[in-house]
Image (spheres, rainbow, N blue to C red):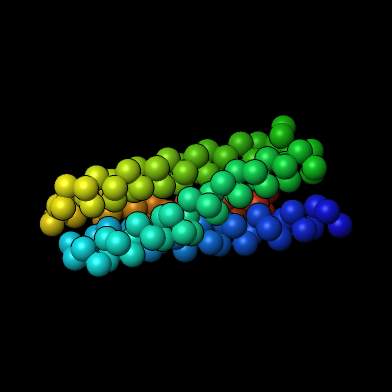
Length: 132
């Protein structure tokens, strides 16, 4: 029963994290200060706290299910590292843009949404299908 609750918390955190990442990517594309503030709030209020929960519950689930030697889990972890790294870059870039008062949008924000969504799709496929 504990495993199922842990999985539910993990999934809620993943959904919240992806929602924050989408908001950050879209808000960062726009030069208006209000949209950048929304993107920063999504980072502090959604994405960052949810990512902490994801990283706490994910390895716990892997330990509980004894999946550490599963190749699909290693592939999933690679994708999760990509998304986590992208989050760090988006967060730092949003802080820098806000500090500098920049009116242009870096190319990072153009690539962030497809990278986030494709990585998420890969993670979902690996977790459900467990192809190897």
